[in-house]
Length: 96
Ligand SMILES: [Zn+2]
Image (cartoon, rainbow, N blue to C red; front, side):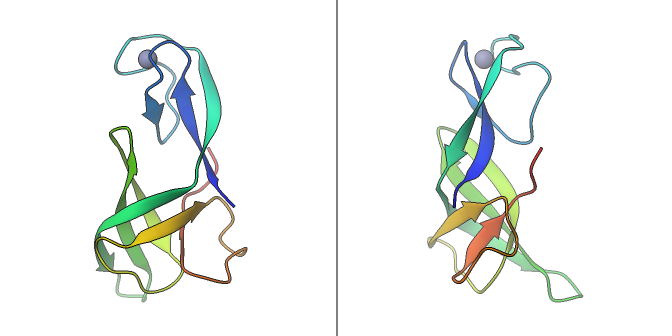
């Protein structure tokens, strides 16, 4: 299951979290697009055991997501908007 991110209909930049205006061209017309996976750049573990990761999604977009299992930098991980759908390691980002 992919995660939805925002794509500017004018310049095709992809954005997350959602914006009211595109920071690159200033337009306010967007479409939701699927981001299937990201590459883990770095991870950090919080005191409660939650693991957060910065992932490169491509086209210049990076997201911070919660990992549902262990992953190392350089590893490709599926992105999802559903934190409970995973049977494997995924990176969860909330719906806008
Ligand atoms: Zn734009």
